[in-house]
Image (cartoon, rainbow, N blue to C red; front, side, top):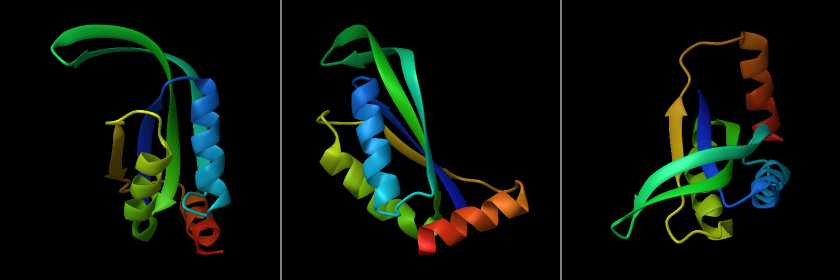
Length: 104
């Protein structure tokens, strides 16, 4: 089963670094970097607004835990946003490609 894994990063360079490392390690078949997002969040009792970047990884179910573990290791934040959810339907040829690329 395909999973999408979503991560925010401090900036575009960090997002690209996370994306490249994960794809090179075959923990994801593909990663899309969104270079600029505006985030609003509570941290240590204070409302923050920051410019960040984000990445969406496409991976296979059995790679999710290891991908999450590595993203936490590689990330500059002490408590990074790393979320995963399963994909129930999609282009079967694309789904097969994701499985193939995470098996290589």
